[in-house]
Amino acid sequence: MLVRVRSNVGVWRVEELNDNNATVSDVLEGIARTRPHVVYEQPLSSDPACKSPLDATKTLTEQGLGHGSMIHCRVDPASCATVTTAAAVANENGADVNMQDNAAAGGDSSSNNGAMVPNKMRRVIDKDGAIKLVPCSDAEREQKGFRKGMLPLRDMKMQWTLNDFMAMDAQFQFKIQRQEEKVCQQVSLDMASVTDFQSYLQRFQFQRKRIGFLYGKFVPYNEETKDENNEKEKKDDKEEEKSKLNRKVLVEAIYEPPQDVDQDSAEGFVLLDDPDEDTVDQIAGMLGWTKVGWIFGHEPREPGYVLSAAEVIMAAEFQLEAANGVEETPFCTVKVTMNDKDKSVSVEAFQVSQQCMAMVAEEALQVHPEDPKLCQVNETFTAIQEGKESKTVENNFFLTVVPIVQHQSELQMIAEFPRANRELDDRSPSHDEMKRHLQKSGRSGWTFIDRLADFNLLIYLAKFLDVNADYPKICASIVDRTVPLDDGYKLIIKSMAGLEGSY
Image (cartoon, rainbow, N blue to C red; front, side):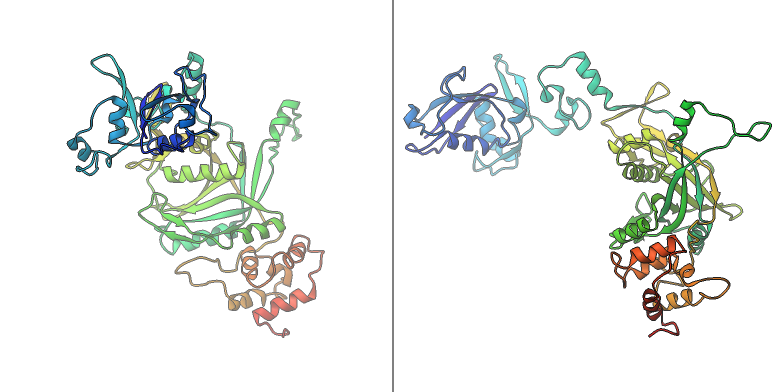
């Protein structure tokens, strides 16, 4: 049994239906075999106006339909072309598909029904004035798209106003501006942690890139201005409200996740799956810390080359994660490198602008294939710089410099235990290293809890102790030294380290 379905985009043939029990569902399944995403605006009906829908509970024969009958419907044109056969396209256009066309479409030249063509369709006006659908290539479709990689406007919705169009277009335009006001006013570093990080990079003359995550606190930053009498100036309500947004970052420790050096990648490294990620965050939380930034080391560069496009994009991704969206965050980027001339080590801190965060969130920025000092703008988007459209943006436009100071950890944390996940280092976390580390307690004024207060040692110990049961008590003694550590924990830890006086 054959029925024809006349829609607002053409006539479709549905064949091989059972003469006795074929239903509306069978017709819809027949259409779906070549057009699986059709959206019906009016149901299958017996009349051209679609005022008399067919009964889905009855067979076609019961409703007076037989071989060659015509059924009517209205559909969304944009949903009618996904994957179809060459023969079906010919039926829609009222023409035959010859063997040569079929073979050219990638099908079997011995059959008109096997050739598959992509479901990209366009309307054309034939020489007799009839409108018909014909296949079109991706390139042809993209040329008529609203923007590169997008559907044409008519495929999104049928009617557009000027305001609709302008609002739509504005979503894909970015007027590049520097962000003068930074959210993070200052980064205070625990220099013992940073020194250890840069010392490892110096082993390779900074030719191996490496990153670490900064853990610590976001604290209010209150810049004190003094008058001639060395007294604080009064601020009005607006200034006080603004000062609440200003934050300072206290970096207490660095954790280096598993990573591989990859000189062929734009970043210069590849982050690996980290089985300890949740544990590290959990321990940091018990110490009153959170992830406040990231640090990376890179090879010496020419003057003016601050961050690469890959580093800018990664910094924006980290800020987006910290802020849970395109919001203000003090999350910072710290970079360590070596001066190529005098071989001195420099440490600098930055933030990327909220505009950069927004562009990265929309995937509007890409790594430039030739110049790492530039971010390339995705073809779907438009960057307006100094009143002109630009295909690239200089990385420095997205950066704000953050001053760096030093501080002594309020928890009296030390940073002497070997770091995990390092290759070609002369020390690695082990029980022997734990013994050397802890046996210094009782010397030079160190107590046992003082030596235990090392972030990377706590991460190593978590492999042998229960983080949920044991660490709340251990961390409580580290945070508040007036809270004594239970002797049982001392005995267990000393025993693992092989110290005298333990089992």
